[in-house]
Image 1 (tube, rainbow, N blue to C red):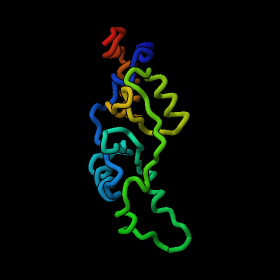
Image 2: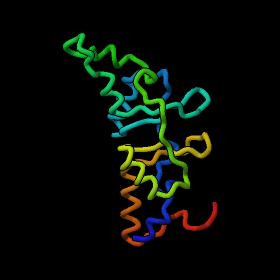
Image 3: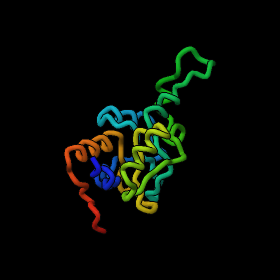
Image 4: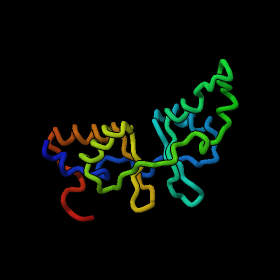
Length: 151
């Protein structure tokens, strides 16, 4: 199991993740979540910079009843833009972040995934399932693909 100590984010992350733009309607994000069973998507501006994330919980928050109506106006809310529902403060990790640290951040912050940034460039997403896969591999004695060598 000591092999897990050598695992880094880049060993298990999903590269080139699906993203969304801040001006897309929430309905399109909901369709992506449904199709791929994603929990969240990085939100990129026109220059490709991560400006937020939108999660299933963010979508639910958009429907939070403000007390003025008995039922939330579904069609109206689904036409709103991603920027109206996204979380602008992004917790991220880098490709070389030890997987032990990613696991710790997921537990402490209750996050299901993190964008993976190399500098300010989005290079992947790491999710709970990825960390669990790393744990399984380490438990089976599989060494981290990144190893100790510099790349």
